[in-house]
Image (cartoon, rainbow, N blue to C red; front, side, top):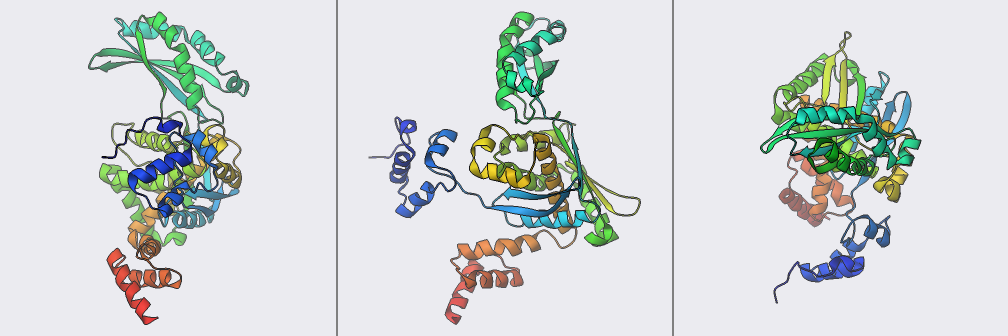
Length: 423
């Protein structure tokens, strides 16, 4: 009988029974099934409530970046990421930044947009004025559904409206401007948008469809700045080389995409470590990089009057400290404690500093020795382990591959055989 992925009532099964069904379907070994079923810091009943059709967890290595001095205060930065060299690079960049006072940060506050799509309006520009005239009513209605948020100083603070052309004619897009305080805000904003939808239909005579938060958090911007002394980073030539590398990203979106990916190596690692939404953060950052109509780098590099390198970053970061996995995941809660941040804005500013550090480290490596040397040195251990090396042989195989500049699976196997015979 052919196997099928149509499994009736799969979602009703306990996690272990789901895992057994998957084991049978995929022909997993006992060891493979046991690996999937090892839930680490999370209890099976916890993960069963976090997402659907749970069978296990996917652990990601977590390290701590050191040396960070931000606004005069020291931070240890938990980072969850599978890529080698990222945490080491951030730590090294932070060490260089300390010489000139570390990172200074600021932010615009924890404000998000809720979008409501109103269609089928004959006079959309007139309808826009009707919506703006009813701003106080809309805000009052939105705030009534989240008195706790309002109590802490948050809530709907403004209403905006825009007419947009679509292939089916003009639509009116209403924005609820919501201060989310220490929450990421998706649940609060979405509930507000859904609540005011029927009122907007009566007000405009149109039909409301989508009511949803925007992940382009352009009112929740985090900024960080650092000065890197020319002496600590390698001299005038290195300063100039890093600025030229930045200018490459400024004029070429193919380079800018990888430039910004390096920034997100740092930011996404902290996002994941703290139980925040990596997809929302990635989407918002890349959308903001494109907001002018051209995809641009999220960092800027300049030379100071004294010849030092000055790096700045501005990036939207919709992160929270309450709700979601941040509140329910024991590892995320421990990581927030390690960070010692007290507000969502402070967390976002720290993440911006990490993004700037990560980007600086990447540009410095690219502009001098090339990115592969340090990266491959760390990656070589993974290749050696994958080839079957254990114990002292891991470092022997890794070091030999780096020395030869041949960090490859086939070479790792050859070296492992040689070293094993030599023993």
